Length: 242
Figure (cartoon, rainbow, N blue to C red):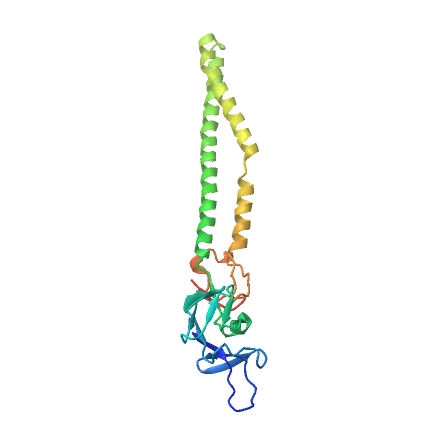
């Protein structure tokens, strides 16, 4: 899509002119009051090309035209709506409010692929840590059962002699230390808080960024996977660039 930008010219003597003129596919629209655009802006001053990926390229149409982006003279440059574009030497600032309604409604959501990946990896890491702890607890549980059983067997065979105590006491000591260790781990366990923070960040980040400077905020996390995100945002109706 290409927008031709220039100063409105009078079609007849005495007819008011001087508004910002924007032409898309031969159709003209105007912005501002008459004579609001100074004569340093030519009738065909520059073009703004909107690419399929949503990027915008500003280009001068004539060498004698002056176009500045953030104070720097340019001939052709990729711009965003956060840039200040000045047309001509008279200091006329291109109003993005005039451009915005002409732009196709597109929202770039390609960054959400990494948002989904980071969330899935974070949850997977927490789940693996939990599985390791469960496996370790199972081993200690089996070991504790064996130690208790061994103590019972040795006790029924004439009490605890010195050699029997040398076997059972270290086992009981290991069981006690292991249980104290797990008690401390349980006290310091921050998995619940980590999961809560991971979900909070995912819910804040996994949204439609909006289109043409207008925020949307439609949540896409409910689709489960990045590839399941629709091609059109159900809220702002923008075409989603994936």
